[in-house]
Length: 150
Image (cartoon, rainbow, N blue to C red; front, side):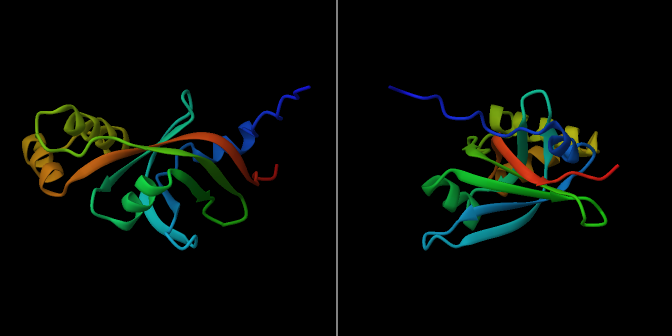
């Protein structure tokens, strides 16, 4: 006899904490099991429940996620009393190697979502290749935290 596992928690009140925020904390797992935390700018897509972050290929968080894709992501209100922690499996996009390639297009899309237009897209695309950037996506499958009161 099999039983269905309970559905993951995706409390809309907690998910709403992502709206309008751009700074969060990404938690990955080091080889020894301890957390590695990074402050990052992020974009939230409520429709797909996905967090997107621009990361550099040679950073610890990327190495950790290549080894173990489990990730947690923390966002808080300005006063710190309400917060959400999202959990999910990280997906690392391809590294930008061609300024006109899909990986660079994905980074442009993320930049536009976060900051609007760039004054020199050719320069931005070249920088993404030079910095070895890629887009990290976390498909959120569980959240917990403290919703704002009132």
